[in-house]
Image (tube, rainbow over all chains, first blue to last red; front, side, top):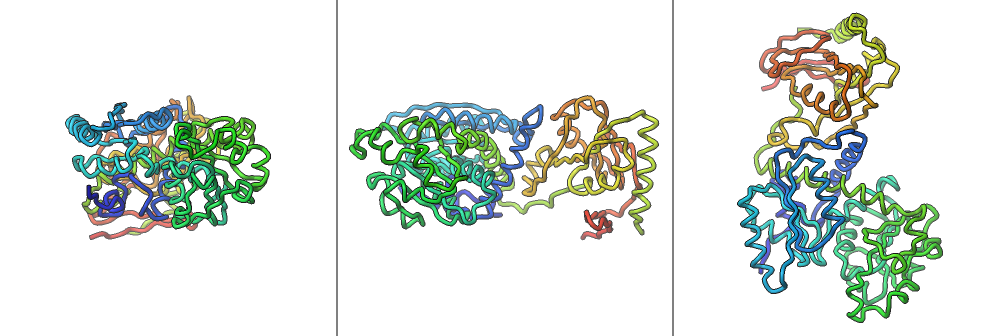
Length: 334
Length: 165
C-alpha cells in the first residue's frame, strides 16, 4: 500500500505539530519546543491540584493494540493532568485480520467524537495509517509502532539528558543492546543527531547491531569497552527475551558477560556519566542491580519526565489541530 | 495623550500601602503575571507588607482561548510559594476584558486557598467583559479603538501607546 509522507502529514500549514508520528523530518526548533514545553509542565508537580485545563472537555482514546503498562499509564496520567477525558482500549488483534479490524475500530471511535488517539501497535506504520484514514481534526500520537518508531520515549530521554547535562553539544552517547528490533533506538538516533550531539554510538553484537545504521549517522561498536569509552550518557535497551529463540544470541548469561552494564563496564564511561533505560529492566541480563539502583542511574527520572513530555506533545498536537490551516490570531490580548 | 509611568507607579504604591493598612493585610505574597505584571510588581513590592520574594505566574495553560488562539509557544515559569491562608497581592500591567485575571485566579486556587486576593493594576482600560475590578489602579485610561498600551522592560521600564490598523 502506498502511504503519504509522514513528515508532511504531521505538520499543519503553519509548521506546527498536528500529529506526532515520527521524529523523522522534525527540525531542531520543534524538538526544542517540545522539551521547553515539557519543562514548564514539570514544575506543575508543585501544585496541590496537579492539573491544567488545556484539554478540558476533549476526549483522548488510548488505543493499545499491544500491551504496555508503563507507556499507557503515563499517557493516561498526562491526558488527565491536561484535564482531558480518557478512555483506555486494549485491543488484541489476530495476526490475519489486523488491517480490517483497525479500520472498523477507527470508525467506531470516530462515531464517539474523540479528539485524540494515542496508538500503540505491533505493526510498523500503524499510527501513520490511522492518521491518514481517520476524520480530520483528530490528533494521532504514536506510542510505539512495530520496529519503526517510539518518538515520545526518545523525547523523554532527550529531556532527561538535557536536565542532567545542560544541553547536547559535545556529548557522546552510547545506546547498547538490541538495536535491530528496537523502535526506541531508531527514534533516539534521529533525536540525538537532530539535537546535535557530538557522537551517537550503537553498541551490541553484529546480529543485533547491523552495519546499515552507520548510514543514519551512528558509530557502530561491537565491543562494549570501545563503545562505552568516555561517553557522557549510556542508554541500555531491553533485551527482548522472546527473540532468543531466533538464534541471534547464544544465551542471556553470555549476553550479560559481553554487553551487560556492571560497575566495572560503567567505569569505562566518564566519571559523571548517566545511565538510562526505557524499562522494563531485566536485572542481570542487560544491567546489574548495582548499576540500575546506583548513583549514576536516572531511570526513575525518565518516568517522571515521560509524563511531562507526553503532556507537551498532546497539548501541541491538539493546538495544531485547532489552529488547522487558518491564519493564527494575534496572541496575548489585554 | 501623555503617559507618566513614574507618576502612575508612585500612585499605585501609595494606594497599595493605604489599602493594606485599612484591610489589615499583613505578611502578603506579591504575585506578578508574566510578563508586564512581573515588571510592575518589581516596582511595587517595596510598598507591600511582605517578607517574601516576588512570586510569578504564567497563565498560558489557563487561558480561555486555547481553541481559538492555540498554545503560546513561550511559557515562562510559575513560581508560587505555599499560598494556603495567605494574602495575595496580584499585579498586572493592564486590565481590559478581565480574562487574564480570571485565568490567574483559577491557577492560584490550584496551588491552594488564599486568605484573600487583592488586585493591583497599572492601567485600567475599562471594557471589562467579566465582573472583575481592580482594588488598586495606577491610572484609568480611555483609549480609542485602534490604540493599545505597550509596556516594555524590565530595564528600563517604559510605556508607549501603539496605534494599530
